[in-house]
Structures are given as C-alpha cells and as structure tokens.
Amino acid sequence: MANKFISHADKVLKRVRTHMLKNLKAASIFVTRAARANVRPGGGSGFKTGRGTAGLLGSIGYEMTPSLFKSRIGTNQKYARIHEQGGVITPKSAKALAVPIHPEAKKASGPRSFSDLVFIPRAGKPPLLARIRAGGPKRAREATMDVMYVLLKSVTLPPRPYLRPSLTKNRAKITELLLKPIPASTK
Image (tube, rainbow, N blue to C red; front, side, top):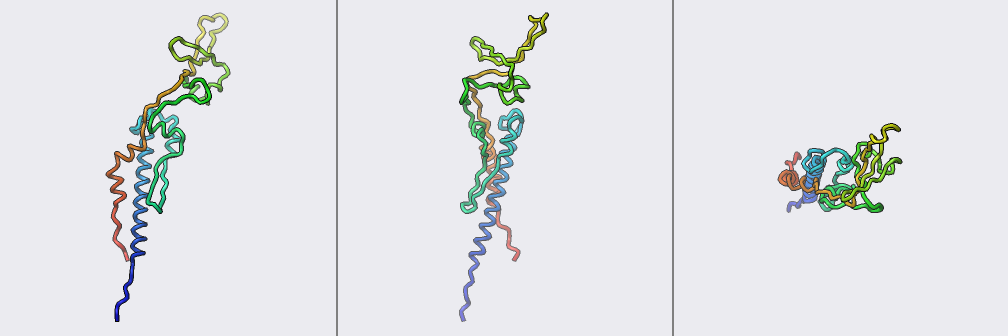
C-alpha cells in the first residue's frame, strides 16, 4: 500500500507570510520613531524650536498594505514637504508675508488680530507693521514703538529632512529587522 503524500505547503506559506508582515511592521515602527526623533528640537534635522512641530511630530506614522508586503511612512500635513525638501514660500492672497517678530505677534493668528498696527515703509528694506506706544502728552518725543511684523515678498526655507535620514542612517538596522529569521516551530 502506497503512502499518501501530505502537503504542509499552505501552513508553511501562512507562517512565512505572517512572520514577514511582523518584520515589516517592526521595521515600519522603527523608521517612524526615527523620523519623529528627527523632528524634535535638537533631533538633527535642523528644527531650532519646538514651536509648530507638534502637529508634524504627531502626524508621522506608517500605513501597511499587507497584500503587497509594502509599508509607507510619512505624514498628511501640508507643510511637511517644504520642511523635508526646502523651498520658497510666497503669499497666495496678500501682497506680502507677515513674519511675526514680537512675542505677542508670534502668539496671535496674524496681523488682523491687532487693531492698532501702523504700516512703516523703509527705503531699501522690507516694511514693518508696528504698534506705537505714546510717551504721554508731555513726552510726545519719547514715543516708542514695538515692531510686530516684517513684511516680506517671499521666504526661503532651507531643507530640514527628517524622513530621508531616518531611512539612510538606519539602513543596517532596518535590513536586520526585515530579515529577522523565522523562529523554530514549537509543534
């Protein structure tokens, strides 16, 4: 009597596939953490302060497509690309960009938050929006001003990559995570 052949190919394939996806997930989590570390102030990507990075930091994540053994790491923030690659920012609906200078202006939503700003043109230099503080009726000559905004036609941001370095600097570790061997079967 001939022995009947029993195939375990489906079980082996399922086990290999499960392990590969587990490795892909581990590598994706590792790269996501590395990218987030690069966005933090002092993380190596050029971010000088923590202001404005919380939205970018919290939005970095990964998305897996198990059927293709594929993972995408990134963010859905509109300004993420200009941080990664650098570029020129120009106004869309105004004549100039209002760059906040004063601490109060940095906290405000824009120049329209202030009703007492005065436009100050300067020859050969960008104009200012300032708040005039009078010195009182007897001290009109001692009037001072607080510069709130500088008006610029464009601003060039240098590249401050956070995604690319997380891949290039950690290539060996990512490869190690992806190629982690399948543990021996306990059955």
